[in-house]
Length: 196
Image (cartoon, rainbow, N blue to C red; front, side):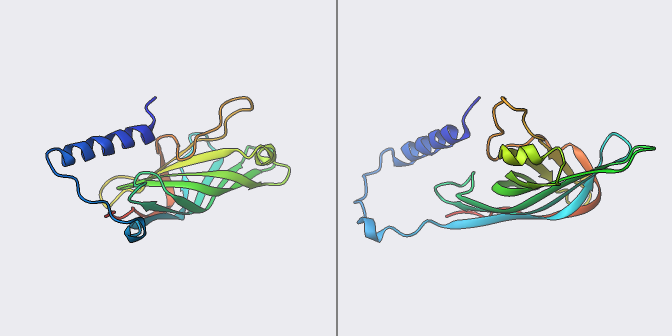
């Protein structure tokens, strides 16, 4: 698999070599005269219920995630913060309702146009629920979002779930495709701005 950090560095090196070809080098500025790098931020906020293929399942995702980017790191945030909550209730005939929820501390937000990916470490879960062990293991989960514009179809979510014990952990900033349409609610996505 191509490492996006290596690919981005290669593109920057190629661009620098192309721009610098045939041009006399400029004198280097003193280190204390170098201006601070420009930064920009992105965010996604909201609540929604997503379609689940099995009857009796109610899955909801609440997010308030933010990321800061710099000219040196335009694709991946230099800093990310916020919260992500996943709620899943299951009702079966003749059985009590089962409710499971988890709260994640955001460690990455990436955006691009109408899409976003959020990952976080599970820090709280429903007492006695199946995710209590995941909190102890500091499991990372990821959610992808497609926030549809007017006339562009339904907005969608994709949930990673948790990796099994002994399996490699989910990498920061990664989540599956946003394939499940929203049935209620929605999100407000602010894409990162240009960097100079």
